[in-house]
Image 1 (cartoon, rainbow, N blue to C red):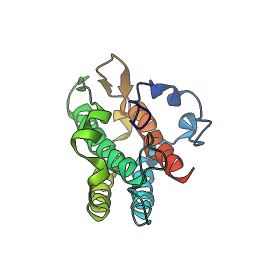
Image 2 (image 1 turned 60 degrees about the vertical axis):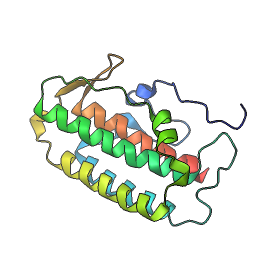
Image 3 (image 1 turned 120 degrees about the vertical axis):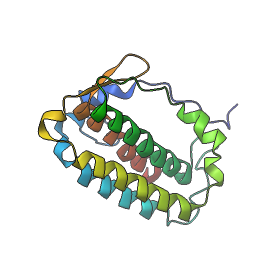
Image 4 (image 1 turned 120 degrees about the horizontal axis):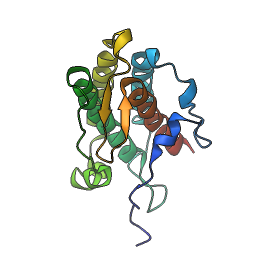
Length: 174
């Protein structure tokens, strides 16, 4: 249907190798040591988005509203906090697949309260930032495995992660 969100099935790992021509995020240039600060900044920027009028209105029937994107970013922060925690305590943990589109439907992103989402997003960003702050210099190369077999280090997980909230800010501002 023309009014349904088309599930995103792209493999976005290319952001580890080259900049995103849409949003301008430059993964290869990202300093992973700045992960905590970057996440705190992104959390604040997203909280500002949630103060806007009309954020639950989809710009097109088949494109998420700013509220839905904010819910997604909140959940990305939560998922990546869990994954980073596993990477720091286990040797090569395997991450369960996360169906972001199923989560959006089941959790009714479009019906969530913006003030609650802002608080939860801020908490999730701060938690993930704090966990990245604990990464010691020799631990950035610890590995984890995505369900599709893609291997990440803590450093590449950070680089990959940062594209999501940056790109979605571009989505809601474009």
